[in-house]
Length: 178
Image 1 (cartoon, one colour):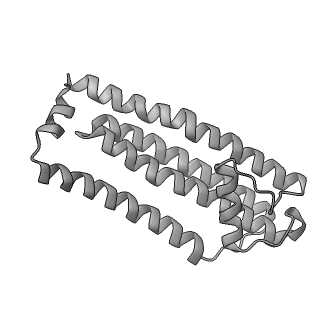
Image 2 (cartoon, helix red, strand yellow):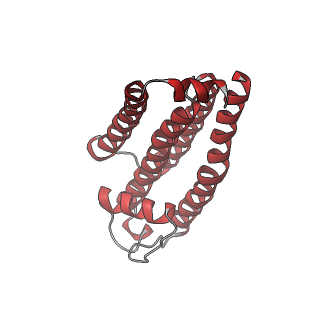
């Protein structure tokens, strides 16, 4: 067993629970703040500025992931840290796209098959992310389809590359402690 794994495994059960619960609560808090921000903060950008908001939001997600990968490598509990990283990065990623869809729908209602509320935009974002695609809300315009395609590509990156990168950071951290 590796050092950090052994260190965590050798903690008394109460201390292990405390560390795991603290990590879970921190992730839940950050996810809740992201979700509340999406639903409560004013979103008043026009179409062209919304694209800059999308680029800025995705840049923020990338910076956050890079920082989290560095922190995982330094963490005494890299697995917990990796779970926390995914629990904060994915909601932020989804909020960026939901905000973009909402703004696109407000700027040009014909971008989608129906007018989008914030909840509709979040719902559409999650159905695209989960590859469910019920078909009740559809990207109709070319610009909406481009953004949905970007999200699909980002989804693949988040699920595949980022998950692998986070796992690699955990493995490097554990190897480093051997």
